[in-house]
Image (cartoon, rainbow, N blue to C red):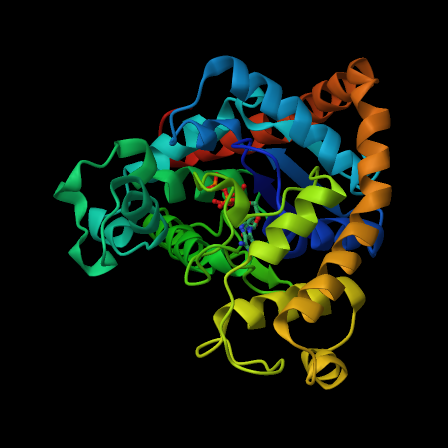
Length: 344
Ligand code: AQP
């Protein structure tokens, strides 16, 4: 049976990275299900959001806003389960069990916590970061909870952005270790499903990914940004002074990022985009990117406005999703508790 799981953190408004790196593939997976027996779960992972301290009221609002945005982007609760992670306690319970079999070394190699600490503490080189730097345990063990999210449902497929590839590899290692330890094939090894868009980069500093939690508002385009904001942010995006438009992520990361965004929205290949715009200057190309982004986001934004007036419906969708997810999660956790000797 094919079981797909993915999550998004309610740490702010989803941006183009979340959209092109994850949400679009969530929608197409949901629409291209091959059989009735397939199961798809999309979770608003609020427990993960606690790894970056948040104002409680903001977190509450953010969760509803994310649910609205997912629905507006085309997530259909008739075809998949959409739910809040904290409404399914088995995520935390399995996470503890997995914590007990994971060496600290596996986690210390992960780059996500290092990048977050680097930004928080304004450290120049990622090489200078180790676990003695004043790191919260939750941020460090984030990938363990993520593995629990995935393995709890015995997921076989996980659509994520390029930035999560390392965590998925770790999840497979954890599943393998658990299966070996208890001599049972409990967890399938989940496959990573990557979208062609790969990593969308920060408009301010294209050596970093576009991120909800970056303090720099103009580093990202939120799905709710007005046409004026989109235009201002793209115009301000860091590029270079080289003439013409060419794709070279190492040498011209800023321009290449914009080409990637344009290509993802239009369906044109990178090559086709470059051919079309090679003689444009940066400003003219930025205008074209702006136009495409605004045009694409317009219907989504209309739907967001509509759903904002239907909060009751959105809450019902989440409750229904959590009820169904809980049923599966409890059954699987029960089996795991028996295998490891907690239950008879
Ligand atoms: N810049 C990105 N490019 C491509 N994909 C991305 N994703 C995130 N940023 C990019 C993908 O979006 C999904 C949901 O991400 P998340 O909210 O769970 O957490 P994240 O990966 O840590 O995303 P952010 O925006 O950077 O959030 P913060 O700043 O709160 O940590 C994932 O599948 C991710 O790959």
